[in-house]
Image (tube, rainbow, N blue to C red; front, side):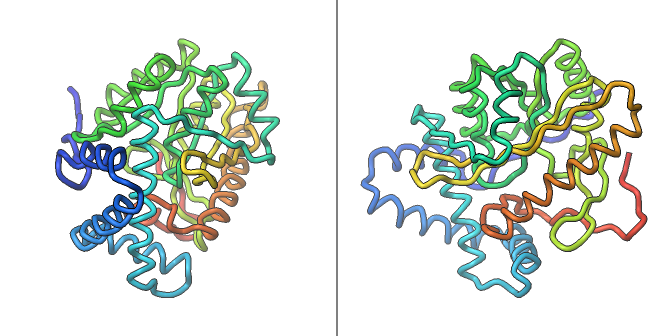
Length: 306
């Protein structure tokens, strides 16, 4: 029996994305940007729960209660990112700038024919990393939550259609079969690894001053199917349609090492990834696009969930 969950909706009216696309295209920038800022204030006051989670997160990062303007800036940064996605979906070219650290290792893997697992987070412009993989000719299945009014996903799916497909997490029972079929068929997967809701496995890692639970499924898949894992996340570049991409070292399960030894090595790899993510979050906390409770802290010695 399927345990598919009810279809969700993004905040805002059903016509909102279409109007934003039209206004961004036809209004001069000196009109559109103030209008986007005003609309963000309306959304900001109309989403008290998301505002509370933003405030709690910013207080942890900044070590003090954030100002109202800092909270609003968190929402406006997301509005600007949404416009980047919508512009990309309607055909504007995205320039991906791969930062030097670990770039050679990432490029070697991305250019190879080897199936791989690509991890990322709800940080900055990471939803646009499909453009980077597209530059290397990569075909990838993206694990994603389907929502009822997501024109950004529809537009990006149409643009990437030749090289990307979506595996929807709304029905976890079917997702397990689809993941298995994709990996056994030699496909590559892209997963976000920060939200716990749809994760089958989670473990505690150091992040923002506490041991917090994070999804760890990507590494179990890597060990089970002998796939390399690499993480990337992206921030806005200096140009309106450019993104700067930071890659991690590549994790490769070692044949003959055994499952537990490989998982222990994977924990060290992921902790390094989260250290780099934390540094980026502390530099630009407004780019942490999780308007949800921060990953829960666990007591020392507590185990993750299977």
